[in-house]
Image (cartoon, rainbow, N blue to C red; front, side, top):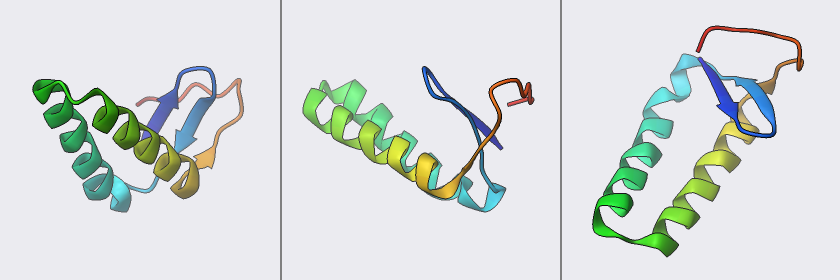
Length: 66
């Protein structure tokens, strides 16, 4: 799976991480729906940190399907 982070580029992640990242995405959705701005920011930072930690950065000129 390829994840793109605006301003940082692309990160390749193993499909085995999908469930964990989907869980964080579900938290983000719940926080948006409830209007929990501070919770959203904290979860977004956690999600981005996990993507950076688990993934492998791709070269800037790499164009991969996502």
